[in-house]
Length: 165
Image (tube, rainbow, N blue to C red; front, side):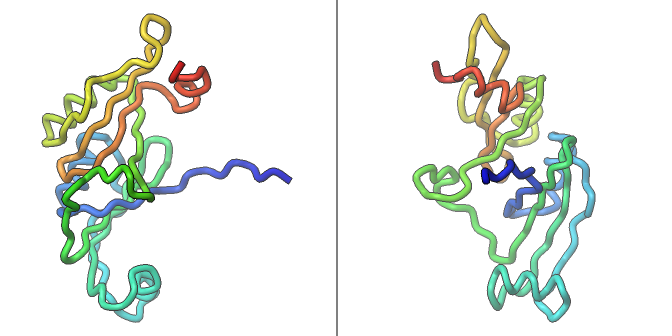
Protein backbone atom coordinates (compact mmCIF):
# COMPACT_ATOMS: atom_id res chain seq x y z
CA UNK A 1 0.00 0.00 0.00
CA UNK A 2 1.38 3.38 -1.02
CA UNK A 3 1.35 5.90 1.83
CA UNK A 4 -0.69 9.04 1.32
CA UNK A 5 1.06 12.44 1.46
CA UNK A 6 1.19 13.98 4.93
CA UNK A 7 0.62 17.63 5.69
CA UNK A 8 3.38 19.92 6.90
CA UNK A 9 2.83 21.02 10.51
CA UNK A 10 5.62 23.43 11.45
CA UNK A 11 9.29 24.33 11.31
CA UNK A 12 11.52 25.44 14.19
CA UNK A 13 14.32 27.99 13.82
CA UNK A 14 17.05 28.98 16.26
CA UNK A 15 17.55 32.74 16.41
CA UNK A 16 19.93 34.96 18.43
CA UNK A 17 17.25 37.50 19.46
CA UNK A 18 13.75 36.11 19.89
CA UNK A 19 12.02 39.47 20.28
CA UNK A 20 13.62 40.85 17.11
CA UNK A 21 12.80 37.64 15.20
CA UNK A 22 9.14 37.70 16.27
CA UNK A 23 8.96 41.33 15.17
CA UNK A 24 10.57 40.54 11.79
CA UNK A 25 8.45 37.48 10.98
CA UNK A 26 5.19 39.08 12.15
CA UNK A 27 5.68 42.62 10.83
CA UNK A 28 7.58 41.89 7.60
CA UNK A 29 6.19 38.48 6.59
CA UNK A 30 2.81 38.95 8.26
CA UNK A 31 2.88 35.74 10.32
CA UNK A 32 0.40 35.53 13.19
CA UNK A 33 1.87 35.45 16.71
CA UNK A 34 -0.02 32.66 18.44
CA UNK A 35 2.21 32.47 21.53
CA UNK A 36 4.44 35.44 22.39
CA UNK A 37 8.02 34.94 23.63
CA UNK A 38 7.98 32.65 26.66
CA UNK A 39 10.82 31.39 28.85
CA UNK A 40 11.09 27.66 29.53
CA UNK A 41 13.46 26.39 32.24
CA UNK A 42 15.07 23.01 32.66
CA UNK A 43 12.94 21.41 35.38
CA UNK A 44 10.57 18.48 35.92
CA UNK A 45 7.52 20.15 34.28
CA UNK A 46 6.08 18.42 31.20
CA UNK A 47 7.69 20.94 28.83
CA UNK A 48 10.97 20.87 30.80
CA UNK A 49 11.15 17.07 30.56
CA UNK A 50 10.28 17.13 26.84
CA UNK A 51 13.06 19.67 26.18
CA UNK A 52 15.54 17.50 28.10
CA UNK A 53 14.45 14.52 25.98
CA UNK A 54 15.27 16.54 22.85
CA UNK A 55 18.27 18.68 23.90
CA UNK A 56 19.84 16.45 26.53
CA UNK A 57 20.74 17.57 30.04
CA UNK A 58 22.08 21.01 30.99
CA UNK A 59 20.20 23.07 28.42
CA UNK A 60 19.24 25.36 31.33
CA UNK A 61 16.64 27.62 29.68
CA UNK A 62 15.26 28.64 26.31
CA UNK A 63 12.92 31.28 25.05
CA UNK A 64 10.33 30.22 22.51
CA UNK A 65 7.54 31.83 20.47
CA UNK A 66 4.96 30.27 18.18
CA UNK A 67 3.80 31.93 14.98
CA UNK A 68 1.68 30.71 12.07
CA UNK A 69 1.49 31.40 8.36
CA UNK A 70 -1.72 32.27 6.50
CA UNK A 71 -2.05 28.61 5.48
CA UNK A 72 -1.80 27.43 9.11
CA UNK A 73 1.81 26.22 9.04
CA UNK A 74 3.46 26.63 12.43
CA UNK A 75 6.64 28.67 12.75
CA UNK A 76 8.53 28.12 16.02
CA UNK A 77 11.33 30.45 17.00
CA UNK A 78 13.84 29.41 19.68
CA UNK A 79 16.44 31.50 21.49
CA UNK A 80 18.99 29.26 23.25
CA UNK A 81 21.52 30.42 25.85
CA UNK A 82 24.91 30.53 24.16
CA UNK A 83 23.38 30.78 20.67
CA UNK A 84 26.04 31.35 18.02
CA UNK A 85 25.89 31.83 14.30
CA UNK A 86 27.80 29.38 12.09
CA UNK A 87 30.78 30.78 10.20
CA UNK A 88 29.02 29.78 6.96
CA UNK A 89 25.28 30.45 7.15
CA UNK A 90 24.63 28.37 4.05
CA UNK A 91 26.43 25.06 4.52
CA UNK A 92 24.74 23.58 1.46
CA UNK A 93 26.97 20.48 1.42
CA UNK A 94 26.03 19.53 4.98
CA UNK A 95 23.02 17.24 5.19
CA UNK A 96 19.98 18.47 7.10
CA UNK A 97 17.68 21.40 6.61
CA UNK A 98 18.91 23.66 3.82
CA UNK A 99 16.14 26.26 3.54
CA UNK A 100 12.40 26.82 3.61
CA UNK A 101 10.27 28.83 1.19
CA UNK A 102 7.59 31.49 1.55
CA UNK A 103 5.06 32.19 -1.20
CA UNK A 104 3.87 35.70 -2.06
CA UNK A 105 2.45 36.85 -5.41
CA UNK A 106 4.10 40.23 -4.74
CA UNK A 107 7.55 38.66 -4.46
CA UNK A 108 9.35 41.90 -5.31
CA UNK A 109 7.37 43.87 -2.71
CA UNK A 110 8.14 41.33 0.00
CA UNK A 111 11.79 41.27 -1.07
CA UNK A 112 11.96 45.06 -0.63
CA UNK A 113 10.43 44.80 2.86
CA UNK A 114 12.90 42.07 3.86
CA UNK A 115 15.90 44.13 2.72
CA UNK A 116 14.51 47.29 4.36
CA UNK A 117 14.17 45.36 7.65
CA UNK A 118 17.84 44.29 7.63
CA UNK A 119 17.64 41.13 5.55
CA UNK A 120 19.67 40.41 2.42
CA UNK A 121 18.95 39.47 -1.17
CA UNK A 122 21.29 36.58 -2.12
CA UNK A 123 20.64 36.53 -5.87
CA UNK A 124 18.69 38.31 -8.60
CA UNK A 125 14.99 37.48 -8.94
CA UNK A 126 14.82 34.62 -11.44
CA UNK A 127 11.94 33.66 -13.75
CA UNK A 128 11.29 30.00 -14.47
CA UNK A 129 9.32 30.49 -17.69
CA UNK A 130 10.11 33.97 -19.06
CA UNK A 131 7.48 35.25 -21.51
CA UNK A 132 5.35 32.18 -20.79
CA UNK A 133 4.39 32.12 -17.08
CA UNK A 134 5.05 34.67 -14.33
CA UNK A 135 6.77 32.24 -11.92
CA UNK A 136 9.56 33.98 -10.01
CA UNK A 137 11.88 33.09 -7.14
CA UNK A 138 14.73 34.55 -5.13
CA UNK A 139 16.88 33.45 -2.17
CA UNK A 140 17.08 35.86 0.78
CA UNK A 141 18.34 35.99 4.37
CA UNK A 142 16.51 37.26 7.40
CA UNK A 143 18.38 39.79 9.59
CA UNK A 144 19.79 36.86 11.62
CA UNK A 145 21.43 35.10 8.65
CA UNK A 146 18.78 32.39 8.12
CA UNK A 147 18.51 31.66 4.41
CA UNK A 148 15.11 31.13 2.84
CA UNK A 149 13.48 31.37 -0.55
CA UNK A 150 10.61 33.44 -1.89
CA UNK A 151 8.27 32.03 -4.56
CA UNK A 152 5.66 33.96 -6.49
CA UNK A 153 3.53 30.87 -7.13
CA UNK A 154 2.83 27.53 -5.53
CA UNK A 155 5.39 24.75 -5.48
CA UNK A 156 3.10 22.48 -7.53
CA UNK A 157 2.56 25.06 -10.28
CA UNK A 158 6.25 25.89 -10.46
CA UNK A 159 7.56 22.35 -10.76
CA UNK A 160 4.73 20.46 -12.46
CA UNK A 161 5.68 21.98 -15.79
CA UNK A 162 9.38 21.05 -15.57
CA UNK A 163 10.90 24.27 -14.27
CA UNK A 164 14.42 23.42 -15.38
CA UNK A 165 13.62 22.71 -19.03
